[in-house]
Length: 211
Image (cartoon, rainbow, N blue to C red; front, side, top):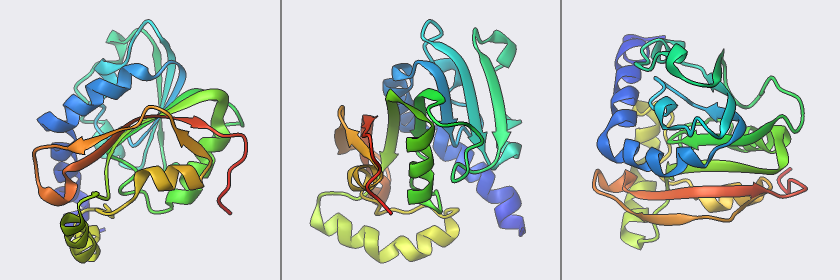
């Protein structure tokens, strides 16, 4: 692992995840989670104080960057629910079928390498009637911006830790067995290629259509 990947990139990711717009979006979706919760890509734990303590029983957090997790500012002892951290990636979730009531992803789907495999795992561990709660940047509807996103995406992935600028979030969810049922979209202030956001929740469909 080079100096950039080991030291610079984690700091850049943490900065991006705690800026004003990112945290405001989390405030909209994190309180939707309930019961036994799995959060994928928790990073430095900026979501922790946003969970509704009256609704959450237990939180499992999975993220490959343990260095970021150790930088969290929230004291786990101050939370009214248990938190378990797992160092790893979500393409192999160490949990049985139908384990979680809610799965949370914020600004994470863009950088997951095996996106379909990961969402199939989410589909597997989410209970029937459970919800996938999300806030993500992705492919813009404006043709001019889409061209720009597609053009610079190969370079951006290399310097952005695998972040994709042009993922069609609703299409990816649907092909992996989810139906967005509270989907909101819009442009937000910031760098153009990452300014179009999708947020809300999605329900688990009985069968996963992607092979």
